Amino acid sequence: MILFCSVMDQPDPTKHKYKEIKIEESIFKKIAENDMAAFEKLYHLTERSVYAYALSILKNHEDAMDVLQETYLKIRGAAHLYKPMGKPMAWIFTIARNLAMSKLRLRNKTENMQVEDMENDLSFSYVSDNEDKLILQAALSILNIEEREIILLHAISGFKHREIANSLGLPLATVLSKYQRGLGKLRKHLKELGVQE
View: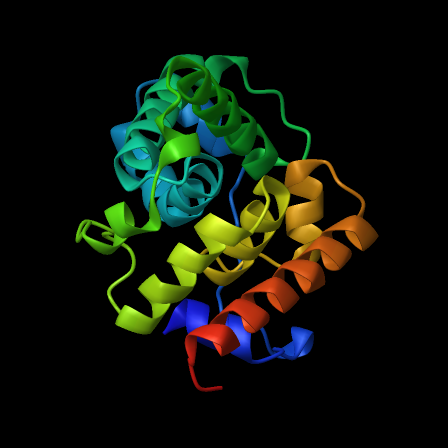
């Protein structure tokens, strides 16, 4: 119940239960040299985060999975262009965001997507709990894009607010504000649906 716990409870930031993603920047050099073990390591370290980020933009599981795969293909092809700056996830998120935005421009169905379509979609591969699915559906339908990005990166991927701010290029105060505003919207929506705290 990852999402449910994160939305209903205010976690103590000093007791973050998710492991922090640590990426050595030298991994991109190895990937550029066609080191498949390094590529697989990067994929397994970051796939959930990239999926959550793509889903927060696209609001569609299949499209998010497409962007997830395209992101890693781009990383593999462009690893030699990576410049160490201490922010490998920001580089990965930039690739994922560009691909997601391209996909959005190519289709208009996201704007017309009904929540019922997601209720019938059993393919949310990273979300198995029914309450988590309800919260995810609420997040996708009632939050704006930045609120979705921040909440899903925090709840699904376990990023700290400071890491989200760095990755998205936003001030920490903005991330915290949007996170709190989004949680308020979700709490209100879930209360209206009768979900117990």
